[in-house]
Image 1 (cartoon, rainbow, N blue to C red):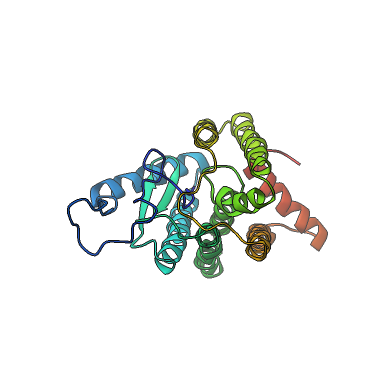
Image 2: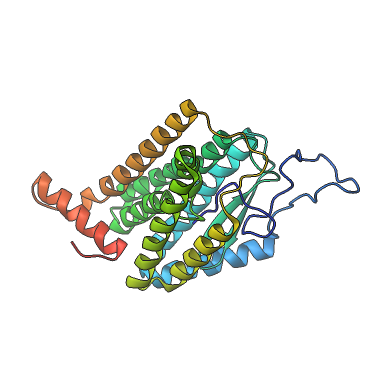
Length: 283
């Protein structure tokens, strides 16, 4: 899973001061340059995460596809961060949880923050294509399950619960209406996410989401140094959020259709059944 672009030094995404520009060289008094995760720690974290996914899914193919999808997702954030002046951004892998992309400074505007948040899920869907290609070449259905897992990584990250991307993409839009609307949505969606994690046995994820929600409530929705969304930008942000979510959901169901049989309606319901089992609830 990914963190949003508006972290702080006491949060999960340490970044430079809001007004700082990415320094070319370090000078006395300048914010330290984030050099990224060390190679040994990155390799170890990736192996731990891959082993955990293998244990949970029971398939090394799905685990490999998910790790690849995670890197592509985070690289989407990196590309957007570098594009809007937050770079050079780095990717961090967190054992048992996922990954995050971290920039050198905060976005200059909420609009840039929204673009950075949505870039991960949107760009991350490209990772579905190699998995589908391998399935076409080998006929191994596990690769289509891997493609489904990749699509779900991106879809789940759009949930508006901190620290997922959706909270940073949709939060500013809700705050534009009223800050209390954003806080109410955070409590509601965050609580539902924690309940889902507990009720489906995803304890690590539930604890992580619970801590993140409580931390966000304590810190508030302060976004230092950022220009607030205008109403036209809020409308575009909402549209991009809904489009990205719809495409991710369509990709998740679409890659499951070849694994089902019967009439088109039967195959569609079969795909929903597989998706429901992944989510943790039987239809």
